[in-house]
Structures are given as C-alpha cells and as structure tokens.
Length: 268
Image (cartoon, rainbow, N blue to C red; front, side, top):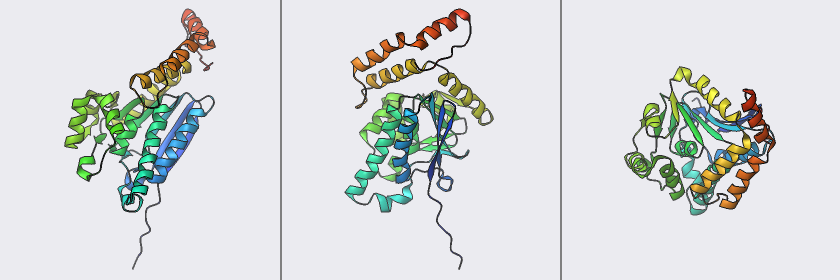
C-alpha cells in the first residue's frame, strides 16, 4: 500500500528589494492557510521589516495566483486549539500578527490574488492599503465554522467597512468578488488579473517614493483616531508631525517642487 506523506508545513518568505520589504505567505497545499507557527513568525517578520534601515514599504502577499490567505489552518485546530491554554496561545499569536501589521511604522500593502477568507481577510484589513484582482474572492466564514470571533477583529472590519457592511459580511458569510470588494471599500482598487502585477507595482512605487516621516506621522494619526489600544498618544502624533517640518526631507520637497522634479527623500 502506498503511503502519502503529509503536506509540507507552510512558511513565510521574506525578501528585501531596495526599499521594499515583501513577506510572502507560502502554504500552497492549503491555499496559503496560516499555521500556528506561521502566525507567530509573521509578527516577528513584520517587526524586523519595520526596523530595517532604508525600508520604505512592506508588502504582504500570498504565494502564487490561487490564494492570498485562505484563513487559519483548520486542520491544526484539533491539536492546537483543544484546551483553554492552547486556545489562548493561538489567539495571542493571531492578535500579535495583526497588531504587528497595524503598528508597523512602514506603510503596509496587501496584494491580494485569489482566495482571501477568514484570517486572510483579517490580515488584509490590518494592512493600510489593499489591492486585489477582479477574480479575488473574499469571505468571513466564522458563522459557518461555529468559532468565536474577537471584538478587536470585528472593530477592525467595522472601522474599514462600517457597521452595516460588517454585519452583512459576517452574518451572511457570503463570498464577495474583487469588483464588489472595491465598491464597498474592502480594498482600495481592484484590477484585471492580467494587469494586477504592473498596477500594484506602480502603487507600491508611489508609496515608497513619498516622504517616510510624513507617512509615518499620518499612520500614527490614523491609529490614534481609530482608538487602537496600542496607538500613540495625541502628543506623540503631534511631535511626529512637527518633526516633519524640521527634516531634510521637508527642505528637499520644497526644492524639488520649485525645480519641477521628483523629490529624492531619505527619511531624515
């Protein structure tokens, strides 16, 4: 009798390309589902990218075209979420990954192809910008699985989509395609599948070419306004805004404007 070996465990691939940090979620046998180890590794990877000198933007993407992230790896639940201690560890790992994305000082961009469901949708919502293919499929299937969903996760959905749309997607557990995702504000833009790579690369380049201190201050302000539990205080936001005006990048921005050329920002 032929024995079939279990699928290889998932992993994260981290690549730095100039000022762009890319974290690729790789678990193709399970449509890039997130294992406990991957949740725990993601928080560390995001924190390392945010601290990397010269980094301008962080891109989160799934391996291949079939899926961004299909959710948590449910096949692990029997072994990893069967008692209160395990459930607490798993929930802490998921919360830690979401918090790392939210708190990352870099602009975080989700590049979504294919399936984006459950924990994958939560990951995308924790990013600052989201772009998808028209063929992408979004779903929040908690109601079909009987699992409890954290208030923090629902708050993040509500902050992006509003109460009515959050209730719709959560309570119906219906599938939303890329076009509807863009229409309801789940993503900023949706592109035809064949145009996606080039179009998203252009958006990433635009973000990475802007003044890092300005974007960092804006992200801090947005987190404060959203009442993120770990958000900076108003005084910290104000200090970050003031620092922009004393930076060399502020001088460079004015000079480039006068000289009618693209600015060359350094983050200083």
